[in-house]
Amino acid sequence: MAYELHYWPGIPGRGEFVRLALEAAGAEYIDVCRGEPQQGLGLPAMLHYLEDASVPRPPFACPFLVDGRTVVGQTAAILLYLGPRLGLVPQREADRLWAHQIQLTIADFVQEVHDLHHPIASSLYYEDQQAEALRRAQDFRRERLPKFMAWFEAVLQRNPGNGAREVPRMVDGRLSYVDLSVFQVVEGLLYALPKATRRVLKKAPGVAALHAGVPRQRRLAAYLASERRLPFNEQGIFRHYPELDA
Amino acid sequence: MAYELHYWPGIPGRGEFVRLALEAAGAEYIDVCRGEPQQGLGLPAMLHYLEDASVPRPPFACPFLVDGRTVVGQTAAILLYLGPRLGLVPQREADRLWAHQIQLTIADFVQEVHDLHHPIASSLYYEDQQAEALRRAQDFRRERLPKFMAWFEAVLQRNPGNGAREVPRMVDGRLSYVDLSVFQVVEGLLYALPKATRRVLKKAPGVAALHAGVPRQRRLAAYLASERRLPFNEQGIFRHYPELDA
Image (cartoon, rainbow over all chains, first blue to last red; front, top):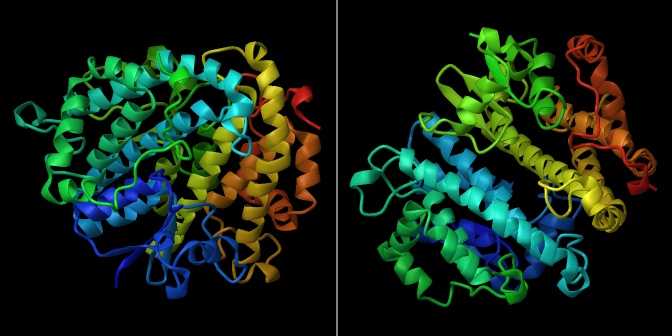
């Protein structure tokens, strides 16, 4: 049975971290909200899980994955669940826990990227919190962006065997969902804050090499060239507001 | 061998979610940063893992747990790891995944509580972002606090068997680390925003009953009355600034 991915239809957002894993593994999946309500898909199918009191274990928010009777919310938990099933994480428990730990740190980073343009409230427009966003972006560029990128770089530098690999890996020697997520974060940052991100990537050659190498995987290359890949835009998490970059 | 918990010594913060699990299970553990450097403990022991290039898999931040050669960072990942070992989560994979999913949502909530008083940057003092904090707190009290609490309440209401239990449970019928974390979040909110929290608890009777019932567990009662339990304060995540409450 195909996996069901439930996420907002118009943005890559957090759903993209899951989509990249499904695509890289060639898994069968339904992108529920991008389907037609007449076929039981679309937004109503997603809202059922979030809003109907008949759902015994409701996710707090999307994205969530439905696999038969299992419903899993929280991006990092979805990847924890999918990783072994898609062959995108090593077998050993310690390695899986390490992969998950990195993914949770990526989730924290993504939240900070979101709060760049929404430092006061998600319920307000960017324009109504732009002054605060300008202040937050300054700290993000100076402190947070370099700190997270330096940590990703350290993870790559300390992963044995990366020195001999054309494309470095975050966990062990094979492609994992963590590599896909680091690729996606860098993609998003290059869209949102191209100046600050290019500058910080110069000090993180491993991250830059991973970002350049991941999309060469055959299935991913096909996916990234397809219409299934949604472009970044100013309704999403990674938004390009030139005034926040420098 | 005793577990090592690494966290800032002066605040309950995120470390407390782990400490509550260790204490409720009666596990042997060392609160590393509260020990003496002469005995190989204290802050230097923690900073080794965060800063030394010789650490192969460095946590991004504290809290982290050291169990022999295993180092686990990220509060929710630590509890994912400890849950089965401490008997604080059901056996079934689906139940463990559900517990973890709730814990990750609690982690998101805790981050929002932190950003209440630090909406611009963790690197700045509260006093330097107080105007922004006042705006953020207004949205938090109106939108976010009720939304998270309503979700916890829905989780409790839909957990079969809670109607017949004196103290409701978040996952299945026995005490889990998720119950301990919900207790701690409510404790922290009652300290930080007593007015807003008491108001919202009136609409979440299950959460209120869980919060009242959890500390009756024998080991927890002893812990909460001990000096090992750190009080909330204005260096932590849950801070009482009366101007942010209403």
